[in-house]
Amino acid sequence: MKRQRRPRKAAKKQLVEAEAWDEEVDEPLETPDEPDETGWKTSTAQMAGLSRLVRAGVWALVVSGPVLGALAFLSSSAPAQGAAKPAAAASPASPVGPAGFAELFVSAYLQAGQGTERDLAPYYSGSVALAVKPGTRTATQSTVIASREVQPGYWSVTVAADVTAHDDKGKSTRLGVQYFRVGIQATGPAGAGGTEQGATAGYAATSLPAQVAAPAALKPGGLAYETDRGSSSADPSVETARGFLAAYLTGTTELDRYTSPGTRLQPISPAPYAAVKVTGVQDDSSGSGQQKVPADGTVLHQLVQVDATDQAGSPVSLNYALTLKSRAGRWEVASVDDAPAIRASSPPSAAPHTTTPSPDAATASDSPSPSNS
Image 1 (cartoon, one colour):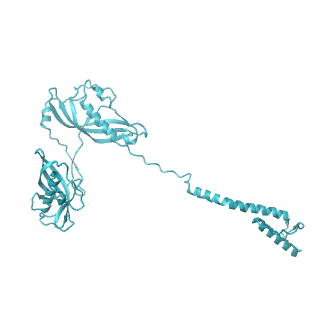
Image 2 (cartoon, rainbow, N blue to C red):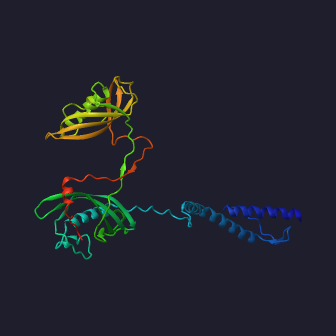
Image 3 (tube, one colour):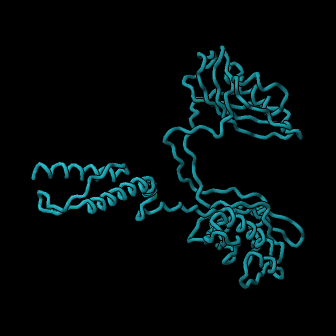
């Protein structure tokens, strides 16, 4: 009996494998159901059903493979549900709009007077009653010197105005620079000084200007030009500065003959001055004499004082910071510097604020100054 069961088992196994891969085999003749060695009863019909299930499972795996792969790729590339997106950095509010509005308001305020209070309506909508006559004071020029956001959309702006007083006889007296602080509320986006993106920009003063003290004066730090060269024509570096500035300010000679190759310096056009006189030169070199040009590539920084005569014959004092470079036994101008060089670790220091009143202002101090109230 054992010898007969082994062939039947082999046949059943062959049938299952063939049906799983959809192969055709010669099925053995049906035999009566007999228990196998494990005690389970099997039949050809049962084995055929099992083979169909296996075959269906195999095809399901084959078909679903690409789909499962695509889902796995998408799930790996998608952001995690709990990951927080980085918040966009908020743009700082710009003071330009409130500052310009405050400057216009101060100019209008200085010129307004009794009966013309409506001229302030575009800037300040509060109740205003001015006692001064209109036009008693004017701002010949003004500029914003400080602007601070005291809270979102609300600005404190300080305006410096060069004020001139006018009396009933038409005489004008310059009172000097005065400082006015005003509160400005802004609407609109941050670029307009406000807090509402997409809203229309608008401004309003919260009160009349308040006159305030001038900002503290500062004494500048020490400059880097510690050697005084004077204005001697025997010094090659001084002669280069003299020739360059004459060409730069008067246009009477070519600028290229005094500049390093590759520089893109251009003379002022039209020429503002008819003549230039160098009155003093300081530089950052060591030693008292500079009669010989050093090796090629040596750099020298100069501060040059000049008296330039304009086209009307009036002298004008000017200072120029220059950088010179040596080449082929001569000094050449490499650049006109943006600002004079200062010594390292030489910050400005506080200095008492002093003013020299003009003769007109001294005369005006004998009588009460006109003011708005």
